Length: 429
Image (tube, rainbow, N blue to C red):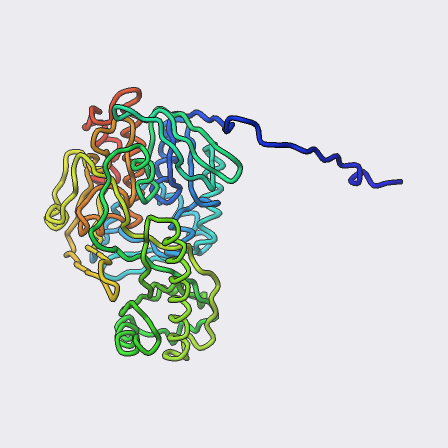
C-alpha cells in the first residue's frame, strides 16, 4: 500500500496580474516593534483600539532584543533616590522577568537594568499574541498614501508579497523615520556620522576576574592600534552569576543606503572579532576562554529623524524644562557618539530630570501620525539623551494616547490636560 504522503498533489502557478496585496485595517498601525513601538501597540490595545504592528525584521523586539543592547537605560532617576521615571510596559516586564531571574538591577549613578534578551524576546511575543495584536514581520515601507497631513494607507513589501494597511492613526517607531520619510514629510539627518555599535554576547567567561571599567578603557586606549580597534573605549555588561557579558566596544557606520548598510554590518562583525581577540589576550583570567554566543543585529543610535512641531534642544535638556504637553522624562546623560574614537558623556546631578513634549513627536504638518522612540525630534545632543529605552517606551504610551484622543481629528488639537492625566505615571509621579 502506498503511503498517503506519496499522493500529495502539486499545482503549477504563476503570479497574478496587478500586484495583489493582503489588505488589513485597524484603528492604529504601528511601524516598528522595538520598545517604543511595542509600548505604543500595547497601550493602544489597553485603550480598546485594534492594532496592526509592523516591523522590517523577521522577529519582534527591535533593537532591544535583536541588537543585544542588554541594558535598559533611562528608566530610573539618579541616586541616591533612584526615582522610577517610566512605568507602562516595564511594570509587568520587570515583574515577570524577575520571577525567572532574567533581569538584574545595577546601582551606580543611576539604576540600569540588565536582561536576558532571549527571555525578553519570548516575553514580548507572548504579550503581543495574548493581546490580539495583528503582526506583520519582515515588512518594509514601500509606499504611503498621504495628503494634507493625513496618512490613509501604507503599503509594505514582504517576501510573501505586498501588504496594505488602512488605519485611522499611525505611529512611526521605525527608528529611522521610515514612515514619515516615505509620506513625504520633512526629516532631519546629522551633518556627520553618529556611530552605531556591533554588540556581541560572550559566554564562557570568569566573572570574578572581570576588569574594572576604568581598567578596561585604559587598556583599550593603550592597545587599540595593536589590535585594530577603532573605538578607544568600551563597556562590558556582565549578567551576574551567568559568566556571560554583552560587549559594547565598537563603532560602526549606520548609513541609510542599502549597499553601504550591508557593508557596515560586515565591518561591524569584523570589529567585534578584533575586540574578542583583544579581550582574550589582554584579560586572560576573565576572557581567556571567551566564545561568541551571538552577534547582534547592527545597533543604530541616531540616523534620520522627524522634523517636528518642536525640536527639543540641549538647553531644554540641561535645564529640565517641564513642558505642558510632556509625555516622557529621563535623567540619562547626553551620550553623543559623533566621534569614531569615542563619545561625549555629560552627566547630571541627583535631582535632575528632563522631559520630551508631545510636540517633538508630531511631524510638521501631520494630523494622524505621531513618532515614538529614537526618531523623535531634537538637536543632536538632546536626542542623544532621550533615545534610550526608558523614555522611548514612555513616548510609545504618549503616541498611543494622542491618537486615541484625536480619533478622526488632528493630534495637534487634542485636549492636552487629558493627555497629561493619562500619562501621569510617566511624567508627574
